Length: 304
Ligand code: MG
Image 1: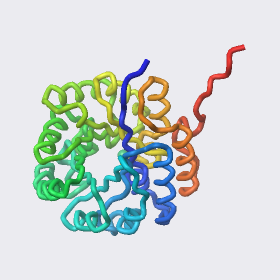
Image 2: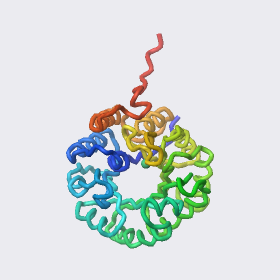
Image 3: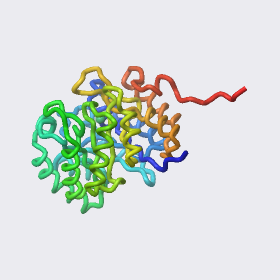
Image 4: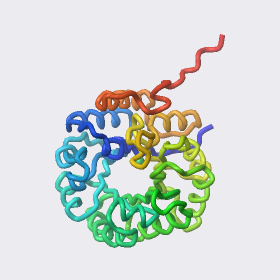
């Protein structure tokens, strides 16, 4: 029953924490990331080099990144939005970056202050510079299934943006269900369209939100369509900024449980993730938002 290899891209330290009001100390973030690495995660989006006044929780990026453990095969992508951020990331020892745009102009304008075309023009020199430094590069395409401003999104829209990002040199595009409205048939359609457009499957990642309870169903649809890279946030941190109090990021422990049961190899220990999840929930002072965090894994009893 082996489905092959799946990559789990951990977003807890960046996407999970960025909207948290309680500021977490740098050394506690480091402990959290160390626990993620100990759990076997090898791609951990660590922080964001954006304006500290915009995202106060991640204002310690310059101190955090160089303090993290470096292991062979371990990647700590960081978010950058402009030249100043790229320079800060370089000074802190970054070797992997992510840039953030959208499938829809409405979301891009509200979120990053530019329409999609302008954001691509702004990122182009950053991606060239990062490429010349030999860095790994990811491009996020948010609102891939629905937009809080522009409404329904056709699969052609995120694919179009993904193709532009790939032309600009990204190693991977990540389709994000930013407001958690996508359903499996949309995921199947988008994956098929992306593959038909010539995007290699190993360059496609998905970032699902569980806002309306569809995240794991969407993972299953993406797996069936051939996708093999998924974002997740340990502890299920990172609520939905567009639905106060609602769930956001798919929890890493929920993803790991599904992948284990389905026979996919991913190198991540469920117990290790649960340990990291308990650590982050303690830091945030609240209970875990994930299903498996609540219930635990399952060791079948011996039949009698
Ligand atoms: Mg997210």
